[in-house]
Amino acid sequence: MDPNTHTVELTHSASTSTSSLPNTPTETVVHHSSEKSTETVIVLDAEKQVNPWDGYEEDEMPEKTQPRLVRNLRLQAFSIYRRLFSVVFLTNIGIFISYAIRGYHSQKIALVAVANIFIAILMRQEHVINALFAVACSVPQSWPFFIRKTAARVYHNGGVHSGAAVSGTVWLILLAVQATRELVQGKGTSVATVSLTYIVLAFLVGIVVFAYPTFRIKRHDAFERMHRFMGWTAAALVWSQVVVLTNDYKGDKSLGHALVHSAPFWLMMVLSWSLILPWTKLQKVPVRSVVLSNHAVRLFVDYGPHPVPGSFQRFSTDPLNEWHSFATIAAPGVTGYSIIISQAGDWTTEMITNPPKEIWVRGIPTCGALRIVPLFRRVLFVATGSGIAPFTPHILSGKIEHKLFWMAPNTRATFGDPLVDDILAASPGAVVYDTRKHGKPDIVKLTNRMVDDYKPECVCVISNQKLTEKVIYGLRSRGILAFGAIFDS
Image 1 (cartoon, helix red, strand yellow):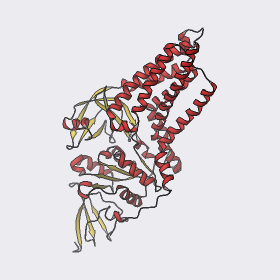
Image 2 (tube, helix red, strand yellow; image 1 turned 45 degrees about the vertical axis):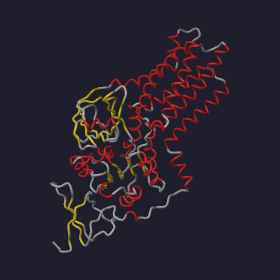
Image 3 (cartoon, helix red, strand yellow; image 1 turned 120 degrees about the vertical axis):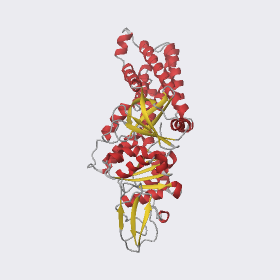
Image 4 (cartoon, helix red, strand yellow; image 1 turned 90 degrees about the horizontal axis):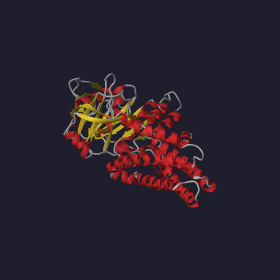
């Protein structure tokens, strides 16, 4: 070997291109070893180890594309989620004003109220969500970029859910006012209808208040219980309300005949089906637990349909009170799937300390934000910690042209050699940044370097809420398309 040549060990997977690296040597030769978890890289004419992040602090960031007020309105105040919410809500407000001016009777108002509640429930139904993603993600990569970018926004469907839920509550206020007026005037509604309307309104106001982001984030377990039990109770009360209101306006017809010809009755039938269906698939299934470290455990589940990459599944040890969603990791040609549970609270800590042999599963694997990945020809994956899990099925499938940037403390000690080896083997050129060794970076600036190097069509980010929002804003404000979880549930 030439005396000017030396060997270094890198903690990242070597890339076939080194054009973006500072002080790039004149020649780089990569030797892959099946016996080691690292890669031997022979660097010629270099005096020190070169990492993909070396010198990134001195990189000049592109200018943001719009004035601060405009970009803050577009990317924060009026995000896609909030735009969908606004479209639904403002449409309802327009109809609401029209109904209030024209003085429609209670039965017509009740129809619109029930229709909004119906839409709100359906937009959280697993089969409906999967159908929406299936349609949106059927757009081929050969289609124009703006069409694929628009289709990718399907994962903001929660904006329709919340917009319809709030609108339904507003309609119930109008219904309560109109029903009370009719009762006082001695025509139309009965005491039972008015009483049920106020009770349902109280429940829906409670659900909306507790779903407000500040409360939902700080008291998430309490939010889930209240959302579930108050929602079930409200659904039962709306059923009663539909029956008594139909009875008030049935005229000479029998109640049964009037119900069969009542739109709210059929809306409630479908609504009830959508609520009940996931619980018909409630099962306690055996799992094989592998403790990866004192921070994470991996559960292997041989159950149910093979989930598509980008899906999540709900798990519980107490099915009436507490459910947790985790990204499914399905390897090609292998039955079942696995999930990674990392330490983030009492429940997850208990899973790691006392790994289960059985666990409750409800519903079916449901599409999440990363289901949109196949819409794009070239994608940069940005993950922190256990955020690698949602990306893993895409990586293992070998169908997505991608580059991985994974930032975590000591990945092998935390997640184990088998998982890390599988990921790196399927993701040539992956960059693994050890925060324990190198400290926390300016992730926006470092991600921007990866974008400059790789030239992806879009960037997908999975991290905690604060970091996800920071990276997505930092990229999108500079004209780089970026997607990530929106933390709306």
